[in-house]
Length: 67
Image (tube, rainbow, N blue to C red; front, top):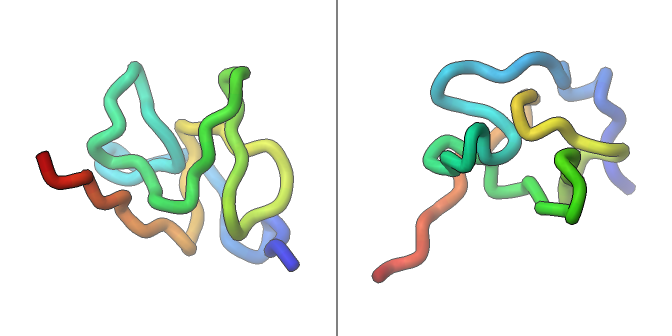
């Protein structure tokens, strides 16, 4: 069962940590963020639509694939 936003302090993101890509920059995106066709995304562990510019206490920086 996914957590509710109020359980994880879902709120405005920080400069170097946020849910998803901001201005097409995903260097500080969370590994749990899932991209959708619309601006809003979803999360593996938090319920509801997720704003890529927001953040929560479950934030974990996404790992970049080896090139």
